Image 1 (cartoon, one colour):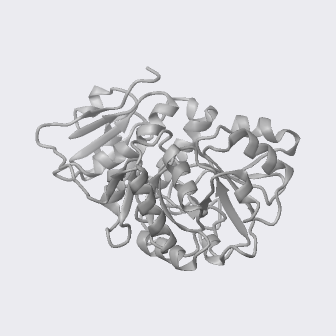
Image 2: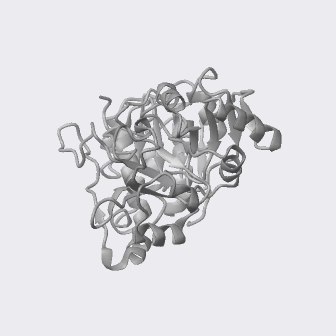
Length: 365
């Protein structure tokens, strides 16, 4: 039922070994002071937002930006999102602040909405992968806001994980993905509220253009933009030979690569609840979905059942993929049940979830 909690069903043969990492620190005043010192020295700090954990570095320092790309193994053509504490901080980083930005920021900041605007000359080219634009947002998480206040810097902060991998929604996900040599401090703020990345909206085009679906419903964006309208990009391709909806080598926003958010274990979206489709996948299998389907569960070593409401499903999606990826012995495949019938096309958040799953299922490049 809506609001229900995710369930993990593990057979006795499967186990996970918890890991402890001394880099993970509660976000108290001492840890925030340490984080601020690291950031001013162009080091990196991982911190929680309401969407996913970010890998933060000084957005005005080319050295720090270089470290972000290197730590993640991120392609240099993929721009970063800059986090700021309030609207006033945005005005120093962009060349204009249009009426649409005023309206959207008033309604959705702080929150999981990223706005793409014209970049000011004072901002390094590297943060936007050489593009003349800049992606900005004010996060709605107390630890993120306290960190921004403590350091007094705009923070470039993509998701705190290796490029193309599953985004982290807990501090331990960051520790498992990124080396201590690259990320000396991880601020622990508990599980992320939304569990998927921010909605990204390009305000340099007319009408404004949705670059990435996320936690902000499109209906609310359309209501706010009113007569300006909203252009929506096509969904990502499902197969290798399908045409790309964007230029993957010159993305205007993060999250536009064909393969992204992907576990190490091959992931497949089942086209139906048919048993044959599942049995075509190699065993041992993991199963991820919002329903209890005994005919399919019987053929799987591990079952992750997520809530059947979109907010609940999104909040635990990445964590469930991490759990499936970490099962011992390793799974050979992960199958995902079809999303709730009909709602994937009509519910904005289900569309964002579908976007993440399609990219996670894309073959490696």
